[in-house]
Length: 118
Image (cartoon, rainbow, N blue to C red; front, side, top):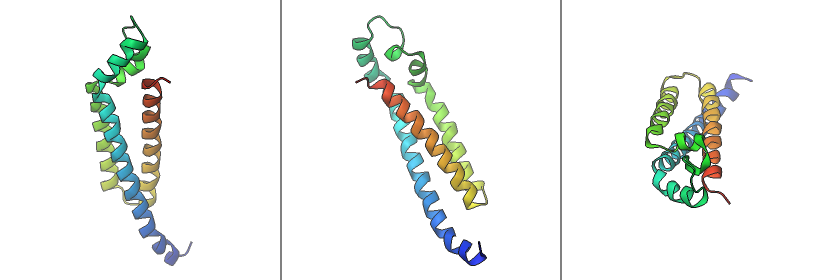
């Protein structure tokens, strides 16, 4: 790629990077809301899984849907913001943000799938 072409693509990469960063923050807020809504899910769990000591009959959900799990989200948020501020290359930032976005989407999808049985 010529230097001129690279300079033309740079504003588009920066815009896409900021959009992905905003989506990540929105998804982290959604995950935090789910983790703080344990009482709502306990009511559903007690009706569906009578006698099970775990939330929705799953020890993984029992551990993840707790207010204490917010610490993991705070660490992830700090890592994302640190990456956004400190990385020099826009291409590297974009790649890391896309990977973290996929991780956030996978975790949120798994929690929603397991918490709301059909």
